[in-house]
Image (cartoon, rainbow, N blue to C red; front, side, top):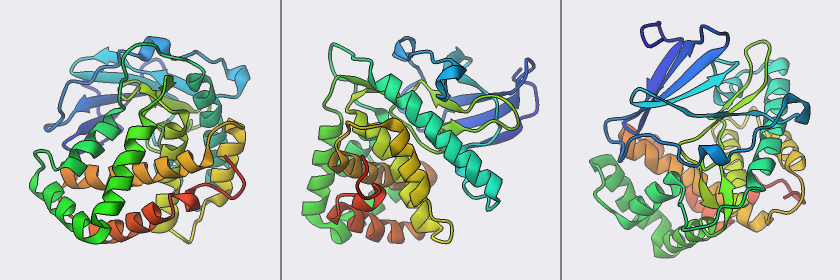
Amino acid sequence: MTTAAPVAEYGTDLQLTRVLHDPGGGFLWWHLPGPLAARPLTAPLAPLVPRLGPETGAALAAVAEPYGDGLLHRAAGSASLAAWLRDPRPQARRLAAHSLVSAARTLRAVHRVRVPGPPRIPPGLRRLGAWIAGEQLPDAAGRLRELARDVWGERRTARLASWADDAARGTHLVHGWASVGALIPPLSRGRVALLTGEDLAVGRPELDLGWMLGDLVELAWAMPYFGNDDLRRGFLDAYGPGPDPVAVGRCAVLRVATHMQDFATYGGWSDELHGYLDFTAELIDEEGRRAVPQGES
């Protein structure tokens, strides 16, 4: 399998991704640790993920299997929703809407699982906390942290840290990285897949909802000519009632901030990060309200 030519290959110093043809049909998504990954990729909570059949309309939780130095996922597509959202064709938009509705149903089922015992903080929140604290940062991440002190100030930084602490308080199983990069629409036939495993953790359900909405509001900021209010509203409607919209908005901010600091820490410096600091400052001030469609939760 590993000798096959990859369909796609990309990554950062945190994680590498190789997409290959599955001899049995579909595609294999192979996640490998990057050079600066703090630990090997494992998925100890994977057995807790509920298995949902296609009749539920939910996305397939493509649970990770150990393989080589990383984790393997099986999906019917070779490109993530992040790529499809950049496609202006109407059929791509319809596929995106369907994928987000399917993901919402899967997340609802995941969140019904309660996990007793000590807390398991999602890796993304751990990395964000380490960056906020200024712990052993590479040059680009340290530079970003110093600039954040000037642009955000201590009050915004403290608010962000408190929201991260709150998101990790809970007993629900959470996906931990429910994002447009982990959501794989089928190339032609088959189910939408939500790559699931290495980021599974315990916390508040609002974390996963905010994480996905944070991706979408970031894309709306970067590509305003597309917009995606309808996609966000459809995602929340499919999930259903219950989540606290304030907490969802705050978790959306956490997602954008985590993406920003991960880019600097594991990808290096880009002058675009100046714009991200201003954007995240606005999001912190408004508690991520623009990410949550009015009247929805």
